[in-house]
Image 1 (cartoon, rainbow, N blue to C red):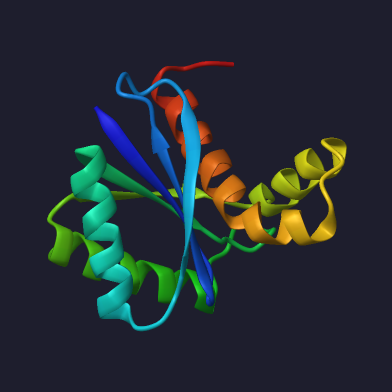
Image 2 (cartoon, rainbow, N blue to C red; image 1 turned 135 degrees about the vertical axis):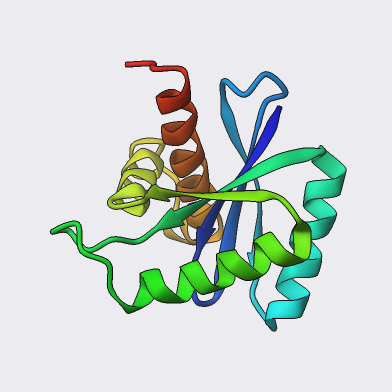
Length: 139
């Protein structure tokens, strides 16, 4: 049961994949966004390569829990993913995942340029791992 995790940004999409048993998440790539159709095609290739069964998309809620324009935009794109790829799409509250990813990379003493290249992939990993932990009730 492989699950794909996505951190959707305006310029990039961070991508993470679960292990075959669905216990752990690992970042695999960052897609540079161009056009929706090209983004979907890249996601299709990844889903086929990893035999993905479902997709978890980070939902950037406001700190008070409300949903703004960014959530609407991501939910619209997730609907396109669902229609074009044909997989179940779920949402995961991604508040502070990018902050957590940056903090982890700072603690690992990565340079600013290296952090910039992998922050979206790391955020996708945090999104997916949070979702996986909920499924298995890990604390």
